[in-house]
Image: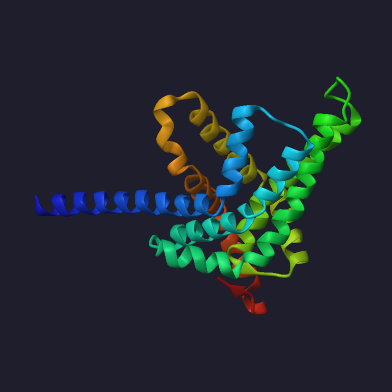
Length: 236
């Protein structure tokens, strides 16, 4: 009986820890992105989509990059070690990866915004024009690469060119990771907007998605570490 009780207490303790870690990581992510949340909610409520609002949305989205990278770093450590100090690990990763994540995020955000504006304002009535197709390809490629760029910079210190090259290589080699992550993000969003009982989901959704991404890419990151371990690669 004592062994069963200890096992039960261990499982409950672990589950409680994970719930707390996911909640706190998600909370820090949201706190660092309050301007974006306000703008996005405002656009959702009033349905306003014009060039001014798109510009405001873009600029308010810039802080997402470092916060997302920090959360990926946090969840990556959780998948490797099974234990984290959320506050310490999150803000350490935020500080260390700030410049690289800002650069890559802003570049990707600019491409996404241009493609979005092109689709909204400069296409004719058909969504299958050449410009529309190119814009959609750009959006998909940018999002897909992001699923590899940010996990890599959350774990390693590479030159920016090397990050892009590695991301492209692993996008081709492990495209299923990108597909699963996009599907998971869509499912979370679908549940959030369709099931009223899922109001608690926003408290954990970004953390859950980041944990899934780092879990799926755990083998990839280990492969990169082993491949470059003799080249004095710096690992976080």
